[in-house]
Image 1 (cartoon, rainbow, N blue to C red):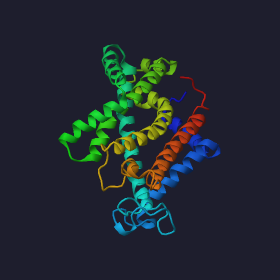
Image 2 (tube, rainbow, N blue to C red; image 1 turned 180 degrees about the vertical axis):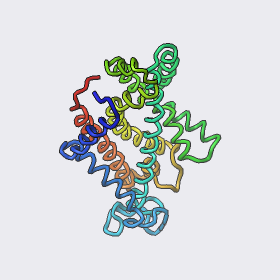
Image 3 (cartoon, rainbow, N blue to C red; image 1 turned 120 degrees about the vertical axis):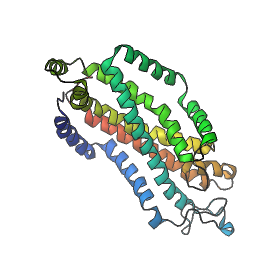
Image 4 (spheres, helix red, strand yellow; image 1 turned 90 degrees about the vertical axis):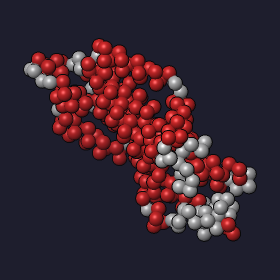
Length: 291
């Protein structure tokens, strides 16, 4: 059990460092790193994703257009590469906000208990009772009527439903840790609640939360792409993988590459995050701690 944040850092960051010895985590890391680099280097390795050339519409993959062209003659590789940056930034932003909000609410609920836990527990149960994706669609629809910024609408809509998972997991971990002997001793010595939470409890709860966040990013990528496919996500002409799937569905028999490549990168991104999360869990759970 870690009693200070410095002790947590020395132990867990060393374990994260040996992630490269875990085959599953390493493969997942390489997948995500490759897609991330593709997004970062998109301006250098790809042409303008907005440039349309009707004379080259629906061209199959070739040396000139590695992934072919779409119905407007735009280069699909360029749109995939630029869409990688959009999708991964959205997934990272949504996961971080959800983790921060959910972890704080879960920690407060688990630590204080009583009426606070009952109130927050009912709120969490209410969100869990509604299918998450259905609620995402409803929230995006409501927000779109009030705000024209599609990216902001997506972030707000998904965070409002995604924080619940972190809250539930954090609550359970905190309820277990707060009864440990070293926490009771710290209380007896007169330490305040804030000190106990941030100095002792959170360092012990953060490992499974990191694993959950990594696994959750794959789910967020799928949600963003699904909203884009339904026309509720990022609006054209901004390149986004789900939106590209939607635009290619009418050409699935004549130009299947329009849907294949966005679908492939959605699937491989989710696979990468899942493998990285599974590997992180294997690495971090080798600590001598039981929740």
